[in-house]
Length: 218
Image (cartoon, rainbow, N blue to C red; front, side, top):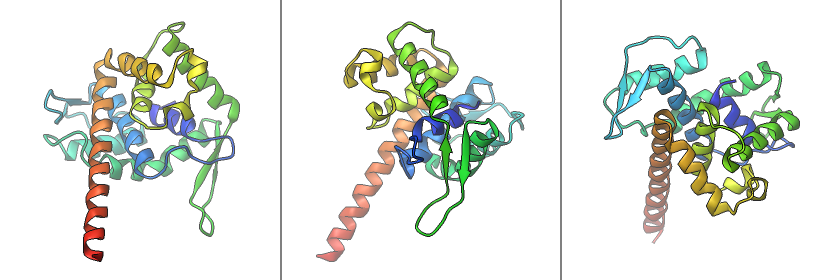
């Protein structure tokens, strides 16, 4: 399963409600694709946070190829730029991927209800336990678990994804441990930094819009 599909699985509660919505979901979905492409040597991020591409035209997966075209078009620019837009474009395909993997069922949109996916609770629970085991040090980290822990460390709702008690830690300790695990792998670290920077930029933009709106109203 792709890392972006695993993130969406983690983000979806048993009743179909998402933990993160909007940019809080779209940005890490795109970041997951960045990390996976980087691990395959198709995309890289230089020390200044700018994208570099190997010139490869296909990853062999249509969802990753969508992301690859996005990053290739932005070669030389900040990796964190436009991750929200890419994630929003990827979301329907990631939902379909969960269904294809047999761990989700896509529900069409309705009146005042966006399209969403119902996931298999046992599949989500198994993934959460796997991440908790890696955080506790009783299981080895790999590209998938390292990337997911790194992406989760950037969210303000980490304890809704993984209960800290499951890993035998406080939320602060779990976040620090997740960051440590992600930083040990170059691909995971690059994706985590890009997502963190994109989140900060989105938050700053929201504050600026709110301030401008308030100023105009007064």
